[in-house]
Length: 120
Length: 108
Image (cartoon, chains in turn cyan, blue):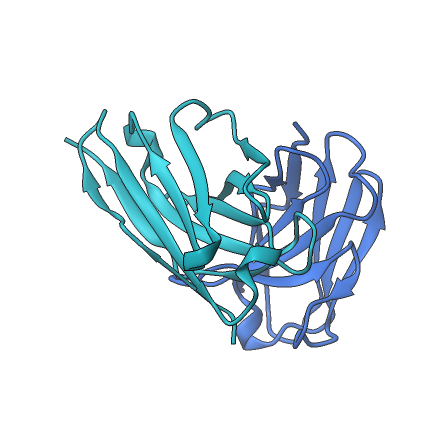
């Protein structure tokens, strides 16, 4: 069974950093592109970032470019999101997501989400 | 960036009725890379339809997708009580990947 479990969320002050992790199991992690998607409370979905299976290709939404860094450790079956210079509008549930097959999407599997609250 | 506009924002219907949800793209979606998701409160989104019209594993056949280029539709033929939720379209062919703003299907 495919499982994605996020961790690392919490309350953080504006301007500070936070690192999210996503532990994957039930599939060959090193074969799949992975994504981060976020959702502000009561709002819609926003794609955040993508990383290729090997980690050689990265892309970001304009709203987080230059502040967030996606990475992965295939030996540990883990995906990460380093979030720096956090702003109140980064407050959201952050989901890791795995595509249906070998391409970029669609997103067949989702984690349960990690809540990040940016507030003083 | 491909902007996806969903309409209506809210759809008020009764169980057993037909629901028709629209998703319009600001430019042609690459290939057939258009998906639909269902989200219920407190849950992660669930993939319903991908490649415009292919149902994901385990999705009942009352859900169907259609469309091309810039205009897409999700149809729920007969609403069941568990279908009242928020629905999002997504294009996954062009970076940045984008989602529509969502349509809430509520009980009338």
